[in-house]
Amino acid sequence: MAPRKGKEKKEEQVISLGPQVAEGENVFGVCHIFASFNDTFVHVTDLSGKETICRVTGGMKVKADRDESSPYAAMLAAQD
Image 1: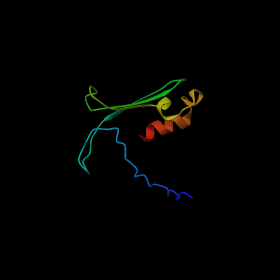
Image 2: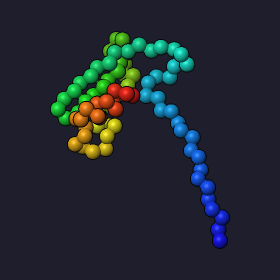
Image 3: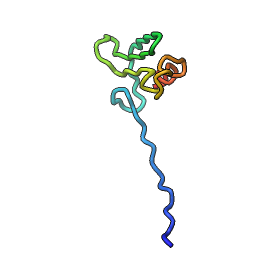
């Protein structure tokens, strides 16, 4: 009989969507939110509005097309 294989523990990786900054350093930005009937867009730029720091939509967070415009998808997009 073959020996049992134990469960391998995976290390969780933290995914950062913003710029690379030192620990404890604050980055200021402007959050532009566009909510339509079909989707919700959260777009974070620097103070001048020219450089994009992060852009997330509700459709990026949920798998079903019918859930893109839901309040749940907007909440998930705002958390990032």
